[in-house]
Image (cartoon, rainbow over all chains, first blue to last red; front, side, top):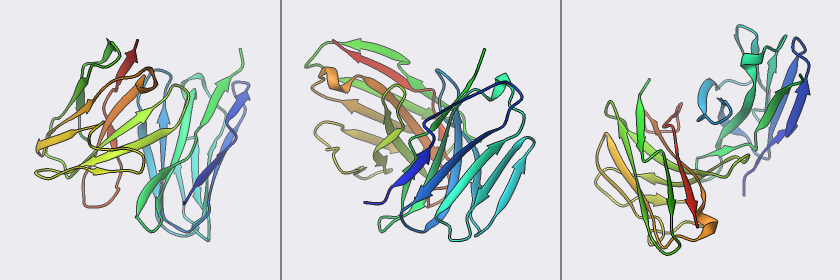
Length: 111
Length: 115
């Protein structure tokens, strides 16, 4: 079945360093959504990308959707403690038109 | 955005019993979903709750184990039946407007522990 692979599983950064997580689908996606889940919390919607090659920014967060609509990335510039959590991508596609969730990337700020 | 509440927030249940989780939304929504999330893991869709008709279950989930009701556009319940320790997990309700998978708003979740 269709899969959305997300890497890395964890990323340890010093506060102020950048963070990037990548998602790759085996098939073309209709759109891709990004969510953030704080420790002990529930997923919170961040953004949806629909167009090929689309780039969207939210303050220090930059989201990209690949030209082939099979991959996407989230980049955070100059991480802060408030960025801590797990970032999930979720791609819409497949024969059943389902939302397929990535495994998530956990952002950890080194003490 | 929709505001979603879930009851209970957590529960500890004995093997063989059942737990019913309620999901209440502050506005009418088109789509309601039920997810399961193991600690540190991704989300797994259990089913889509359909208003006035039977829920649509994902592969590996069956109605006998996870009966779902959705009597109106603001409320749904998920029952986890014949509990076993493997059912220990966080159960999340989410909602979305429109007829496709638009942005989803999640409830706070129900943490279930089965002894």
